[in-house]
Image (cartoon, rainbow, N blue to C red; front, side, top):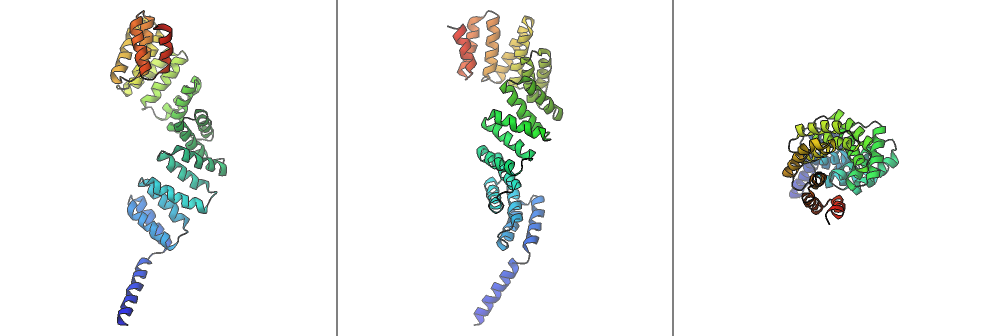
Length: 306
């Protein structure tokens, strides 16, 4: 009997010790710990809060947020899924889960969630932005442009968006659109050599060779080891005329030195050699470009090297 009394006393003390804080207090404690970067301890507090109140949306949501910060993306997705199971039309929950899927590389899964965001909140600029960036990653060029243009029209003004839009429009052949997007990108961040490189490429295609050279010179100043910038500047110098062929050749050579797998640089150098009358050397460069996977080189080989 005495033994049972002590056992009951221990159990009462254990229960009391586990219940010293209410779920609200545990969540507040967890939020503070998460903000301070103590993610493990924060998650333990959220776990305790949910042990007492299994339906606490706030605990589930904030635990998910903390798991994102600790890079536990599967755990975060699981927590956001718990929220969605209880709030199936909550656009914010879908955007949290969708963004986490995006960060973890599950772009189709992210797009499915972001479709829900836009369904439940058609004015979600962030929803369009994130879905557009995911479509960019999956190769849905038209869908990405439509979503990102929509995000911009709704007030999104971010370098990452303009970079994606500029790249997509460059690939789609919309040179004015590409240039306008890179203008915006550079206005927000003047330290990214890729923006100057791509804007320079777009300017070459519009015939603005001097503008292209200015951009490409800046790209090389920012990153002297950029093979792409040297290769594209070689194209600009080639377009400038025969007096610039020597400088163009030097740029193509530098591009290939920096990246022996730069197929576009081999193609550009081959085109220049063909224009200079060095057919056999041109064909050697076209062959190399073809071996590196550049389909455009196959047409030049068929036309000039048989």
